[in-house]
Image 1 (cartoon, helix red, strand yellow):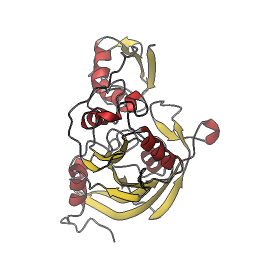
Image 2 (cartoon, rainbow, N blue to C red):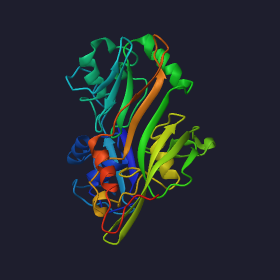
Image 3 (cartoon, one colour):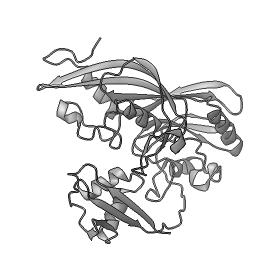
Length: 328
């Protein structure tokens, strides 16, 4: 069945294809460009080119044809395996990799890679999500667990349901976050105005309980060329597991994650402040702690920051001619 997506432009100036990719992240850039070429995207009722700049108040309508059936095939993609036993894998997923196939992302996913590494996971759970017991956003790097058999999958799912799995993310947030340690409690649901996004939504309007504990690890003050920016490096532990939870919660309290194209300050570019450019949100799943299914042994695994995020922090820690950037 054809899917119709309608977007009302709230912030103009971007190319049409880039704006759609930002507001409808479930659609791939190649699919968006194909829909535009084939006249399946209109702006104010007119077909236009992908390069057309959108304006505030424009109404964009996409007609997405019904997808072709998906087939999940093994692909020999290198994996950074942190731990493996007969029941599971703990993988350090790179930014840019989708966890499982979906329409618009049919290949090169984590599931495709894991199927080539251990074919026995085929059919463990949902066909398109073989072995997957939790998720990471495409542009979020870090640790994820993949179950090798149904017994392990069910054991791990019970731990997630009981909130026994401890997940810790490292994130760089805009601004000077205070207090330095706290709990964000705000229900999360589908954004009623932009259905491809999540938002803080009242429980009576469909929002589900969401809690995120955090602790500031380091503060930064950046001054370059008369411009001044404050940043907070935080460890965030989502107690619940809502879609985009960490990103939505920090944006809700006025401290969105640096580089977040959906919930962040879109006009704030790190390069404008002399920092290495960042093509995604500064968010990394740095540790996972849980009980192994077979032995019930409690284990914890960690993944170091990838190069793109590490370079941003290294640059923030370098003093400038106006003094050190780090705050006490």
